Length: 587
Image (cartoon, one colour):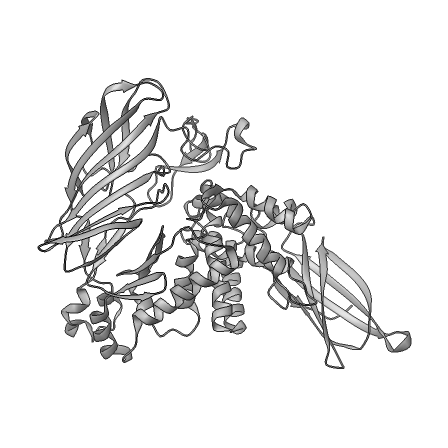
């Protein structure tokens, strides 16, 4: 710890178990935090690694498998007995830290463990093994617990006009939800380690149920439905859902929707509609679209299940979709994007997992771009596509001098505004992929085969594996045929958003041709900033041409011979570059 006369106290923290073990901290002043992370760095010997060191590999234990036997009682009380197997990586390990939802109460500890410790209302659960383990030894631990995990209600009462709330039918509150999707079972590691999972659930027969994994067995005994699921590969993303749903099947997709509640909502607000069918069509269509664009997903069947919130979330083969996307009549393209975003996570985030926290954009940015791409082609509406790009450009540009770069990953929202995570990792991340799409576009034929081949290559190479930004860059370079450090340094590691100012004049040349003089000035970016920017030239004979201008430094000038009189020039006509465009007269 170092105390300073001017400025906050600072502290250097070294944690050999952390993915980035060296941290510089300062006294926190925002959101009640005691400390804020100024910087995190890897050890020198790890700086050139991409995916060679798995996340959590320095943890004292390796988590091998889970067996979960869980019950949701008729009164919605949740209880579970979880058996897990640990393998010691280091000598003499005895205490094991887990994370478990603070509303869960531990009933017993068993197997190779003899006791546990937990502060009141803390999510951290420490379990002690009977005897210390030697490196390579394994131990089976059993944790039994119960608590208030299943919630009951709806967000709809909070968003409908006040005049509707007193008379809303009780059916509108018939949504159940899982209060935490992360720590409903004991999690080990930071980030949590993936493991094989064997899941058995006992739930009230009146509710439809869905879980991650492949359904092996289902049977009923009185009012209890028992289902047995197994994962087809290790995962660190596991959850389930249940409710009074109808099920709509469309190919490999099952959509779970609270039809009765939506019927009553439609009578109150919007008129009759088909919420399950609308959503199901988008989910199944986007699943087919991404399969064609990227390659085969990891699983054979999928469930899209309704949750009474405003967000979505994806798990292996299971997607949470907001209640609002089943009800809205929005025509902006947002709903198609929202549904497709969660589907796209079956490729980006689940099919290919980010190697570390700095690579979060390979999940969220890729899924957001995929949703944009789907919306553009599904609706066949370029106006809505480009409007969405312009809106997000405005958000990104507004934060360009304050928000961190994409490369800061999950920490983006911790260094300034929490909203920066959405703006930078999701929206700017999507722009980065969109810019690569345009860099690979054949401007003469508008053919996108190179981009599609690159995305397919990246997915196929890392399908079922972890990938880092540097891995993606390598694949991009292979398909571009050139080094791409400049691009990733500018857009992933940097924060500048350039402004380009175009001016031009044309003079008659010999043989009926014209000499076109161009000038592009660059502002809001360093002199080293370089970017090829498309330019559309419209001619008096109603023809047009697309070329690229390589903008580098404070300004570039060029003179080219063109076959007819230019009447209009448009820089960045396809929103190919995340930049602000202005024009000025030639001087």
